[in-house]
Length: 284
Length: 232
Image: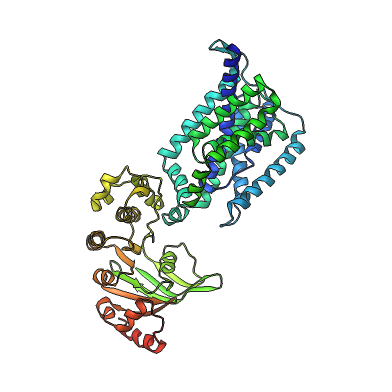
């Protein structure tokens, strides 16, 4: 029983990071209809930046915040490249983001090399339901829940959040009322950069990240986002947690190398189950 | 308050507006009529700044807001959010003025806009445009798909708005009787050109205008040239 609880709790904390990466997919897709496959690159970049800044002069906290904010700016740059000229189809933008992620991997190798980095985080353990859990992993869970709460409030309560939602809901009407839809798209990319960066600085102390971690991270995040129909942050959180727990249970009772397959399988099952909903949403 | 000079708008090779000129005074109501594809919606979109002119000028003293064809709601958002976003350009979030003018919207505040009836959506679309405190309200197809009683109610709101607030109204309308009844002046567009313009009552009685209006493209150029003499 204790073994099972260990897998579940570890899975929840791991799933939180998937959800955080997934929320970046959701924010961009909600506003621009683009699937941003550079989402995993934000996390890797933030981990590299945080380690680099910590090795320099910045203390804990400032280094991580700095890394996340830089990722936000990088997000804007990715948005400019991916959204291109007005009228660029989302599918073309998706391919551009794939190209950007490859470019990002090359840039990371150029600046920081190929070795995985794991900047120091919170040390020690806490007992939770009789299970010893890393404090850093709990921090990931708490920060994720906080980020989702802020994201939910931002979209539902603030004027800017509503304008972002409106841009996705009906771009023509949004332009009609004076909303700059392209600027909203760039803002969504900036938010995605921040969310991806946050995932990176939180995950890296427990799981070392290297230039090649972007794709597995993006894949897990995308699976979580698909669970939320690429539009619901709340369901993305649930999707991330389900995925994390399923992956840990598989690793614990079967084989750790099946984790990516679990993510893919879960994504395929959800897509088949939700295909009618997707078709209905596309038809709107 | 609105002056359009020799306006040309192209969609790639196709000419949508071909040398359109018209003027609208402050607080004036004008109907814009013509067959499908005449360029009426393009003209409104150009006035609203959504479509760039290829040549010519659009000068407007004051703010323009548009009630678009098909209402164009933010369907998954509440009526209140739809209205509040209407004030985005001037950051106006105060609903009280619009609620005073369109009291029916008050009880629909929390309803999702996509679930409303056509008439209710048109009311929201008008309210959303009014949130921008426009000096000119450009309306694309007020009556399309709506019951006559609903249209009459909406028309009454527009009359009140024009009379009490002095808001100028440019109305694209297929329903000839409504256009004539509501707007003292009418402008007829066909194939991207103004073919007639003048007092609505006079134009409505003209057989040629009626033919042009209902999309009969066989009206000879000479007849249309004669019609322009009606211009005020």
